[in-house]
Image 1 (cartoon, each protein chain N blue to C red):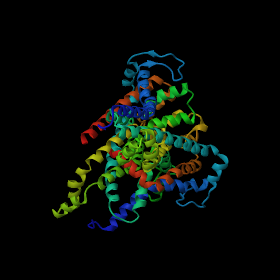
Image 2: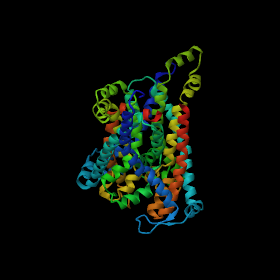
Image 3: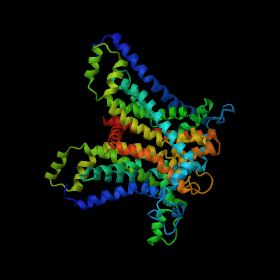
Image 4: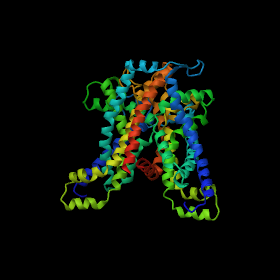
Length: 274
Length: 297
């Protein structure tokens, strides 16, 4: 392993890290510049002067940008809860209850998870319109739950499969029913699986674009990625506002990935190699 | 299981069904039924708000599709985009994975840096890049002009080839990390003693890579390739936010074209035909995926 000089290794790592962070760093720097600084020549690589005006401005004058972030929270949270509840039940049934045709059902769930969201749009839009679900939190939450349930079922099923079966058998001997075993033994034992699945589903929902774009047509109901993308309207892009709003909208995701890095990577790679 | 009495077994099956029913209902309502409905819509005339009663017209929209140049353009753009970005992502992904598999300090930060582009919303990532590509105030042109690499601002998103290159760059930047993480997991499962044996035989590092690492990574690489190809074939918010498909239609993906047909041109049933074709392409890919996985076991 020592054949290659360490210097080369560190140089490569540094370049990769820089390239990964560069757009985000540039965005944050832009959000800390004055409007004159953003459009200055020669370009300002370091904000001069540093200012938080853009952030204050958004809070005072463009509260809709904060509402987008709030909408993303509501939808992401609701989707995560629904997905974990239904996904864990299905995953448990498929991995532990010796169901007939469990294998076929798992393949079916995997297959439908690959449907492209845009091909759902004509029908979902029409049906949501008819049932009054456009521009409602519950509508987009149901849609996202449908999109991400397959992933959750697979992840949780593979997690349950790693639990020692003896505990459940002992509980069954004691006369506990399936539902009680699930609720008071399986769930408490599986919280790491729930955390990893829940975090990834939350990120998926936060980032989802086509359905959030089509099913939330009212400005006040838009999620952060959609609302910010559509913010400028017809004319020039107000980059001082856009960059600042984008920073605010990605902070929750940056924090989640930084804190729960191990769980997310573990969940992703386990999910993909199944 | 063989010892359980039949009645208990039956009760268990019933509980299992009860546990799985909510999931099947939601998946049916959100994924399965809409696809079927899109197929029905693509064979008829109706309106998005249901004010026009449905009338069956057969393959009319599909015939029209075959003669629509913009559809073929969108299909070509999507295939070119996929065919260029996936190999680049794979090469960079393998490189990154090999790098992250080495031992060095601050490895946590490096892995986090690689994870960030993947974790952030594509729509917002794209906005960041669009700002950097900006002709008048973007950082790329600032550096190019100041360093003398260019003598006038480059219109990155205003040229057919450059715009496609810009789009590929954003995709590669975002998803090489995903490839890297999957391949890294595969790397870490390769037993160390294989390399020691290789060293005994006097293998060079390149030979080690070619003859030990790469063959054992076939599974993870295949998974990453197929997942990413399906992703690239349905790319939507990337061209939506970067170029809106432009200049003219040079970067208009199939998803973006379908969206415009449905909501901007209000040709609802024609749009349904487009999404059905797209669905068939991607579903064929997913079948290949599932069969390769089954054969792997």
